[in-house]
Image (cartoon, rainbow, N blue to C red; front, side, top):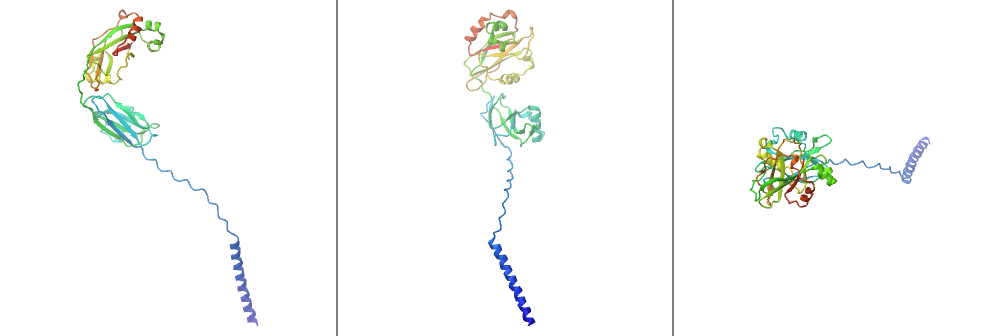
Length: 305
């Protein structure tokens, strides 16, 4: 009897456990477990910005000029560029030091985006090098490798035209000009005199390069120095007022020099004029100035001192 009770008790406990498990399963089945709300997706790591690259091309090479085209890989980053004769390049140092020297000593032009420029003046049959690189203008430090393009300028060909004379035709008192037309005050306010200069050529020319120099420069300057200096400026646009950059004493003398360019881009030999000394007794009546300006020939220049 006792054993039967014990066995019945065991059966009862077993049945109770089974019922409890069933109840637990039923509760789990009837009551869904809430799904946790997912957090925000993490920000993706930014892709590294590709380094600026430069495509540097030199084309249309002649004896005196060439065309430079630079195409960067993006239009936002800055890059620097210079062109120098090959003998000026500091090749004894590595590329990074070259870029530092260029930044510190040559004051390179800085650009963004594609650019095209004329490389001038060049000397005939001379080797040149274009150097370009990315630059951080805030720190003045290079940001890319050094890009280098070397080229040799063309052989000079004799022009079909030459200058036969450059003469001072008339000299006027600047104050007398301003008294007649006050619009000249802004340009001539600091000048003492204004002159009309005419250049003559043996044939029609495409461009005329013209300047004036103090007499002592004939001894101190080489022919190549005059050539490079004359080509440094754009061809004269006539008539225009061209300022003398230096002040001369009354006893100083100067001379005109010029180069004619034909329709093929060939240049004449440099014409060197005779020495001239200015004086007040050379001045003409101011009203003649305006008549001459209205009738100026293509090779007429106005100089102011």
